[in-house]
Image (spheres, rainbow over the protein chains, first blue to last red):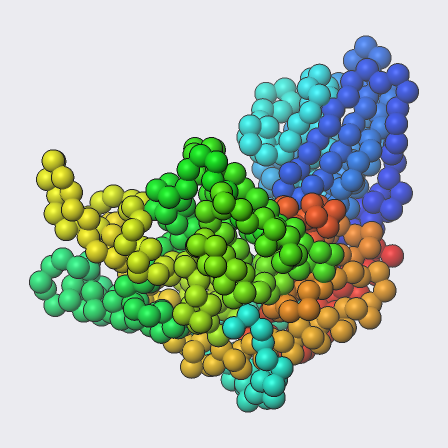
Length: 162
Length: 418
């Protein structure tokens, strides 16, 4: 859709249609499952860390287009980066989606991930976009399973280098 | 009155929808530059100007606390509050107005029955019959009771169309059955349940029945005496009234046997530290200062619906449902979930390959408000093996052109995801 106001930009639709790094990962060192019980979204994430470097990453699951595209673009972005880089991106992505990060005025490393900035205007979709990042945070910290609700709500949880 | 007689369809022509729409200021809104198409009426309906005016008139000329003071305003407010109760009693054809208790909504009303009736009369080993279709608000209170008392919930299954299996319902009864809770109209699927015969069957076995009428009260004529239900609950904000108000209808004999749910002012006749004498019904169940303005607003709302004519409303909504069903059935890649023979104007659907949340967000971009999710009816979603559905729900102020807008919107969704 060409409407620039639409959340459904071509890049998001493309990643939803042809998700990158979708499937299983051999010799995974870190794994986590993320759930959004409110809409049934479910993302499984597997990582292979070599020292601090994310050498391999893959995801699977059932989710809406926003969640799936976010997972696809996330895996493409963090592959080859360090654990610290990933945690920075997790925090910046969360702050962008919740409207706490002003992309024009504040420095950030989100690049084309900024296509998800529009979810800030759609509160019920914020968690769709955040779920993969929340799951990545869990995997990096050896938490096997996480949720977008209750005690594990990413809106309240401490993420990144805080 | 669960069926909508098709002979009334012709009355639909008498319903001047454009004139009705002029009464609803919010329907003139634009959303993202597009005219609002409001199809989320099962979640909450909109308020017409006469109800808004009534709230303003109360607040500007009639407000004081009720039931106590001797001054002018208190007398006016008390009289208007009781008058609202009379309007509600007339709306559902209750035998007496004291059978109408103001609650904060349907959930509150069901919890009142659980606390006031359930905790007194349901015990260990007893069984409560509910249905797969129930909203969480008619499941969770009973689970809480069962946990406390050691009672058990039995569940009436449904078929693939979303209709209750009445044979199975009847088989669930045994010597332990103490209570039945059933929704009149399914919020997730639109199914109109055959509650009159279900009530008669339960009564023949001495079992009282609570009906969750949240989705029925806005859409069809109600007669609690004809239904012979023991309890009937609905919410104000789904019948064009304010939020924070609803009613519980209960047969006087049952209400009198029940224990109060909340203690406080207004629900007592006398208080000493040795003994408190409870007030009569309905006051026994209305502790504290009630939402007076909301109750009076609800009275105005049911007056508005009654003046519009519940039969004409039902007939117009059936036309909308039939037209929408026909249009959506023609769309490849779209599946209607909930195809009961008797349905209220609720259209739950799935678009192949598109998550309901994406459907909802894209329709929102077209100015169309629908609900997506599990509709607080997760057992229904589990039965149809979907995490969620998209749901368009109609009210009497919706038009055929809005059905066309919905269909065009779904086409746009399919194009975006093609």
